[in-house]
Amino acid sequence: MIIKFLISFVSILSQLLFWAVFISVVLSWFSEKKSKLGMMLDQIVVPLLRPFRWARIGMFDFSPILLIILLAVVRNVSVELLLKLM
Image 1: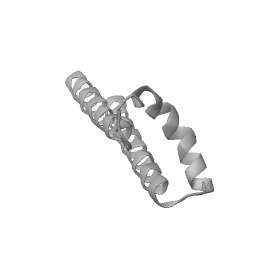
Image 2: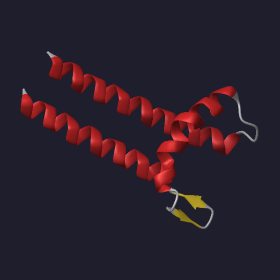
Image 3: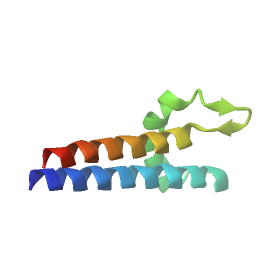
């Protein structure tokens, strides 16, 4: 029972973080001024992106892509480990 809850929690958290990163990236493309939503998402996303800021090539910043890949890997590994505990 607890393991099913943990699997659901990890999956939902990773999905929420994915959408936070995605919406933050889209907002950075289209809005010059920060909205309240953009500032709130930045408080969540920027600390997670900071370790990946080295991934810039010219004007392209690949740190969101790296973070999304890492989130997917962590989610998959943690779910697999939890499933083995069942």
